[in-house]
Image 1 (cartoon, rainbow, N blue to C red):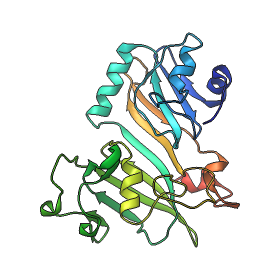
Image 2 (cartoon, helix red, strand yellow):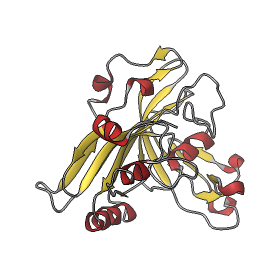
Image 3 (cartoon, rainbow, N blue to C red):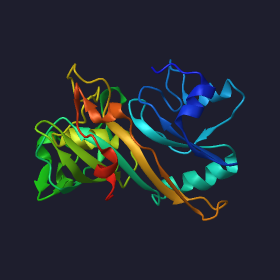
Length: 251
């Protein structure tokens, strides 16, 4: 994992803060909270007498925007919006593949398989592509509990080997983006669950933007953005763009 002193990490990754929230641009390789055998952001802060409450979580291997509350009142106001799916979330992802359309929708329910692993709640061969929509028929769903899940994406850049996507998880299931893309044949580059290439230095998934309401602020909309670092844009020894800001400017 990323080793860091909390004051240094906090200062380096700070996006914004006020009396109620702290927003950080988390590096890949450090957990937000609750990972066994790992030191995480919440624990690091607690060691310096700062109590933080995660409003949402992103995976340890994912970089980017993470929002934390400083008190339980703000935490409740913000987490309710995630639960009601009123938060506008955008991620950036690089797949180790080509062939994705300009826009797409992945409407595939998720379930829990062996060893608590998230998977599509249907056989892989039952996934149907209908134009720019991936889905399964209800008759093909596996027995047991499943969770309707929807991911929308826009293609931003194509190279000979990779595709850069802006991804909106309409639902917010655990590992949703990673599983959805992998099961339609477009795994995220460097994903330890699905991309077994030894040349990847990190998982190329980044939490980029959040839009939600913060009633105590003026204006009340909280619009946050975490620019990805150069490590996100570099696959092996190849930089995919020299001007990330221009690539993202129209979104």
